[in-house]
Length: 116
Length: 107
Image 1 (cartoon, chains in turn brown, orange):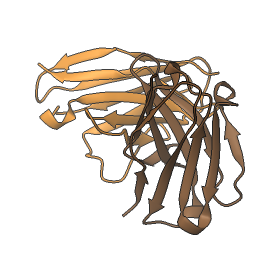
Image 2: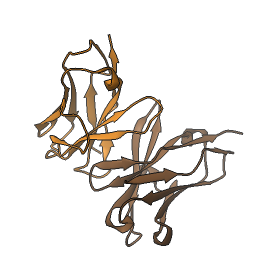
Image 3: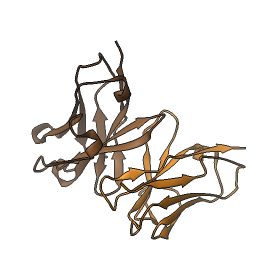
Image 4: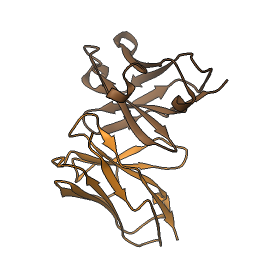
């Protein structure tokens, strides 16, 4: 069965970076793009961007350019998102999801807390 | 960016009732719309795609309709396991955007 297994919760200091992983299983990894989504209580769900898992090409929401960097390791069927120059506004749950337009399978989410 | 206006923000209904959630896009999204269900503590799950197609494994009491800028999700015969938040999402224009969500409770 299709599964997206994300890495564990992160506690980070302002100004630092974190790298979240999303390991796919149960399907051909390079046949679907991976999207990343941010969820907060205040802002709801925000689309960060997606990565073409075959070519590594990316498309970012303008709002997250410079904040998020998406990469992929085809050999391990894993997508990554690095968040840099963290501020308290980056505290959220971050999801990866398999994408073909709609988002049909989601990871369990990673809670990122930015605090000094 | 396309704005997705979802209503109502919260909804309380009795078991067995039919409920409808609406989503209005700020421009035509040509039925490129999905609905998701998110139960407390869980990640969202796809219910409906392409405005009216039921995702795999989703009970037939869920249905989607609409076109242009107006879309709706209907839940027939409300069950206790339907307590959740529901979100719409357009994937016609990038960046893809979500509605603000509807929290459904049982009366």
